[in-house]
Length: 130
Image 1: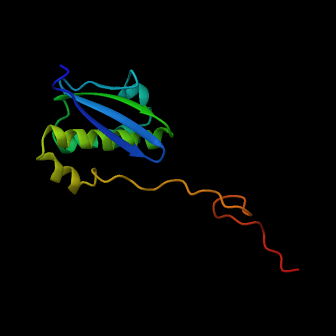
Image 2: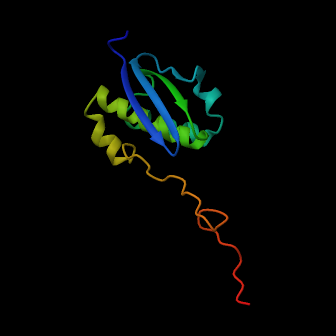
Image 3: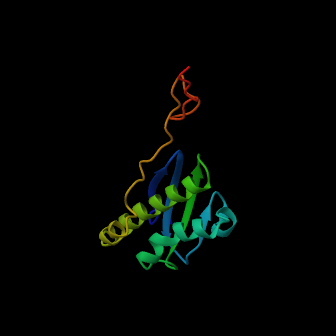
């Protein structure tokens, strides 16, 4: 079992997902919970299952993941990227398919830092001429 597992990492915003892929029956476990228990929103589940649908691996692999940092949206994005990377290691023919659907690209958008003299990253206090 140890030899057949594939490992990949995915990141989005401040979330990091460590994903292990193994041949199996389609079981998905994230931080010890099932996909329905971890990602409650349908949109996030659809987002996460996309790499499996595109590569026709829906019931063929078991996925185990540990996700930490960020919120649910960032964690879903990180998990999706990790899963896509693991699927390319499983079969290199999956790479152009996943790339074509935009699933191999890491989303570089991060929170912009707060600047001094301002209440937020870009927001300014009300300007008064006089």
